[in-house]
Length: 371
Length: 74
Image 1: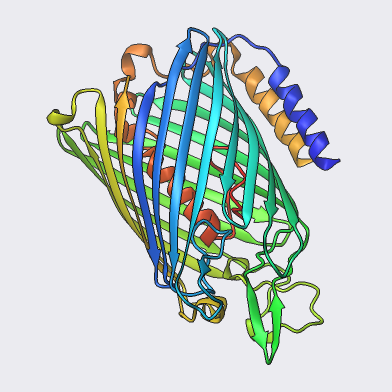
Image 2: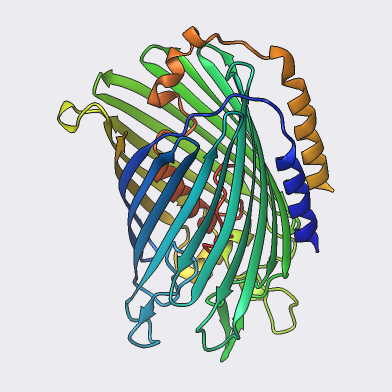
């Protein structure tokens, strides 16, 4: 019922008609390679491809596909794809491998007064099926100084093919509002708000702690409401240098409050190369039902095994290169990045991963062709 | 309730946008915004991947303009 009410509210907002200038639909094709590995033994390689193309004056189409190859050194680790525990040859902690395939398809109406995108997304793993529909609407005002956006998505996911649980569903409904404003010829700012409602089986069937011969599996509330608001600003310091800073505040009905700070600086080293560096700091408190992993018993109503429900900090350092080499052509871009992610020491990480903290590297490489 | 308040805020914002009250940059002054390094997102592939990484490895999510679900992200 809550989701139905929210859907009606979004639809009413989208039906409001005001005159505005159309936003450009960027036509491009992208090929990408992403990789992730951490000290818990997970290694992910992801290949992605996407294309956005105008098929008529009033219609643009976009499609994307990604394939993740997941390798894990221990049965206890699930890959960055989050859902699937890598499937090994047996249950004795041997190395396992799995794949996830995901894709999206959307159409964008390019009216003279507005731009509306409607799409679907799906993700398939051996034990998890994810499906969602989404809609985004943006308008420009004030001679393109201001843009307002509204969007919504509805996910309907299913856990399946797991021996120790029945087929379980998880639904998520998101509404997002955003506004961007040019503040000066060198500065622009953006504010985004997201409201999330999650219902259903929200735990992970792979999270458990052992008490003697008893396996205590993760049990979480079957509903979670969350709000996130993010402020971002981009400023051109001089012709060759820019600064990008953002702050996000997040809170949910489980009493988790999180703060995220991100700052990036970019410098043109030549007409063909821009280098960037970033620092990100994340901190959150614990959910109201989180206890030490050693304190959970069969009598607990909720058991938060995953460390993401506990209090911890995380730091990220990264480098990014935006390249425009002559050999690639004027309409193409080559981009590469690498980031190092490390959490604070955490007893939940110790209980699940046998590591005091989580350390990870993730990297991206992509080539974009604009047409 | 929060959604209704957010929708009301949006409508208020829309009404305030009329009449060119927020025209601060003329079209011929926008050269810097055409640069890639001036985007809120400079590398879409990386941003999409790291948002997924962070949504799995952290308790928070949201606040971005991309809206897709169905990945099992928390």
